[in-house]
Length: 239
Image (cartoon, rainbow, N blue to C red; front, side, top):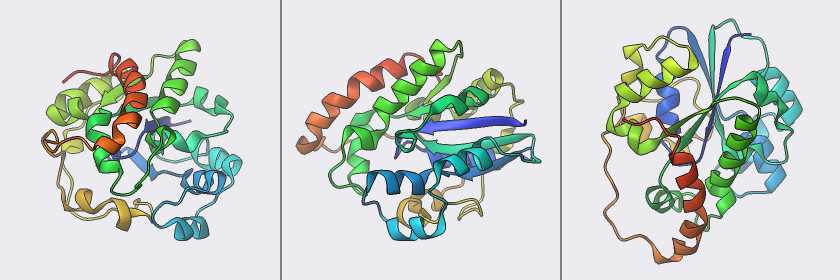
C-alpha cells in the first residue's frame, strides 16, 4: 500500500493550506475530509452546506474507510485531510495502517475564527479532545505520531515541512511551499463556505497573532481546550 498520511486536524487550523501544500507534490494524491458526511449524519451538526454535503457524499463510514483510507491508489503517497471530530464513534483500528499527523492551533487564536462558521462551538467542535485521545492511542501502540502546530508551521513553513517529511519518510519538495491562487479539483463541496482565504493565497501566509480582545463568551470553552492543546503542543515540531 502507498504511504497513507492521515492528517488529524481541527477546524481553522490551516489544514486546507497543508492539503494544498501536499497537492503540489507530483507523487501525492490529496483527499478532502472524506468522513464529513458521516460526521454530519451521526451528530446532526448544523454546518454550512450540510444538506449539499449529505446529498453528494457517502455517509457510510465503513465504506469510506475501506475505499478511501485503506483503498488502492496508483499514487505513491496519499494525503487525507481529516478532521479529528469526524472520528466520532468509530473503531480506529484502521489508523494502525496509516501514518497519522496531528495539526493543532492555539485555541486562543482558533476559537475567535471558529465562531464565524459555528456560532456556539463546543469542545467536540474543536477536535482537541479527540486528537489527544487518538494521539495517546497510537502512542500506546508504539507509534510516534508527528504533531504540527499552526503557529510553528506559519513561522517557518520550509523548516517545519522539511522535518515532517524526514519523520514520515518523504523527500522534501520545495514545490510544497507555493501554489496557484484559486480552488483545486480536490476541494470538498463545502469550499464556498470555508475556503475564501485559501483561494486567495499562493502559499503559507506569515504568522500573525490575533490582536482583538478574546471574546468573553468563549472563555469557558477556552479553559476546556487549553489542557488538550498544551499536552499536544509539547510534541510539536518547532520552527
